Image 1: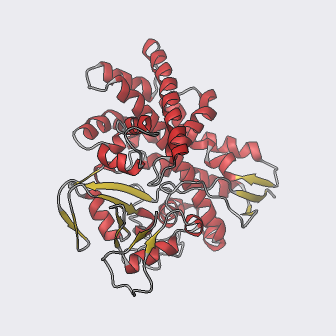
Image 2 (image 1 turned 60 degrees about the vertical axis):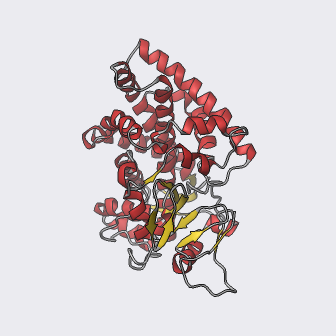
Image 3 (image 1 turned 45 degrees about the vertical axis):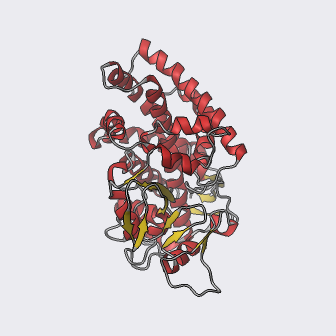
Length: 415
């Protein structure tokens, strides 16, 4: 899908600006395309009716403005499926996710889940994250080469969210496959094959979670799933379908983006050895470093919104019902907000990136993701004296909305 400029910037006629998320070069490195959009067509009107936004100020304003929603109509547009074709089961499933719900349903669903993600609750998880990271590093000790995705970035968040939810650990591999298929349809362009695969995944994942729910009803535990069941049984108006869908969302969101954060973050550091060394020399920088890594190469590149009323954004009139693609990755490299934005700086102050969204949909698991990334990257640098990329030919996952590596092979030295 190419989108040409129709207003929003002064363009030379012979140099039209397009947004083409399927361009292989842009998939490997979207930031040059983002820069061109910001400079020449920051409010881009596409042929399919989408508005594509790329400036920090515009995107931050939309994320916080209640006149823009993420309800089922916008979700169905983002899925690009028809009511009688592949993807219907997935569309129905995603319509129950609080990620795609507006108030009051969003408020109710988020309220039931949020108690498990308080700072106090997540601080209690920290020792377990440290334990898992150290075990994962122990498992690869002595190797000359390690795939940081397969050996660290993926198993850490999968284990953490599985334990938080109370999903049996032995089922992780299958559940990851389901989450991967569902994540694919979050993209603005979805093939029939992807939609069909997602339909199968949502049905199988829902059946699996339903079996675990039945077991937890008989034998409650200390996990989040048991607490959600109790809240539903206690009259909090969480239906069985909503319960299953919420658990599915938490599992997928709880590991997909954190995997990408750790992988993208380590790649950025490996490509900037001076910043990597600065972080080695001063481990207290890990918190600011993770914020900068989130900004520099965001795990989430696109957020979808739809206008619920006529409104003006960035000098353009947006009519009620019109869908919008917010290029979060472009906003995080906007020089109007971040000086020298293409430079990685682990000491960068005031990194108010938009990688976790904003407003009422600000990522519920932001603190958990930060904690896992801080511990994973900090411990890796502390325990492994030598790290360097093993290849210049990197394979990115076939997603547009979510950005992450399939593999990150690294040469390691243990001294």
